[in-house]
Amino acid sequence: MTKLKLASLQDEKPVKLSVVLSAALHRDLVAYAEILSRESGKTIEPSKLIAPMLEKFIASDLQFAKARGVERKPNPKPAAPESPTSPPTSSAPD
Image 1 (cartoon, helix red, strand yellow):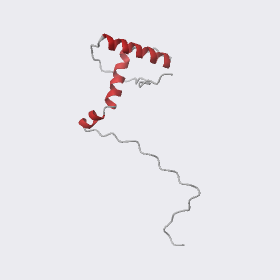
Image 2: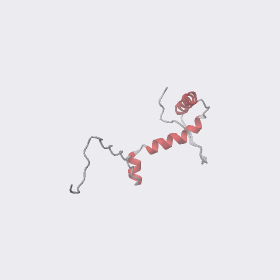
Image 3: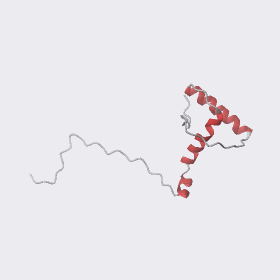
Image 4: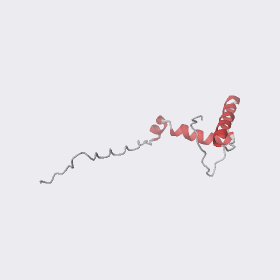
């Protein structure tokens, strides 16, 4: 199975835009839609890929986020579990 950057499409209220694509980009978009359709088992129109691809691109552009003033916060690492063999730590006198 191919690991595509686009895994699924969000179903939200769209804003209609008109764009002009080069023939080569359109062919790539059609090919991408065909591969994604095979992998998902659903028919996907190439035009439905444009918005999610742009979203992925913008979300991954660190310089854009920096210029926009949006800081990406890393996911916090989970705390390491305590070892069952380690002695309890207490500051209370015995």
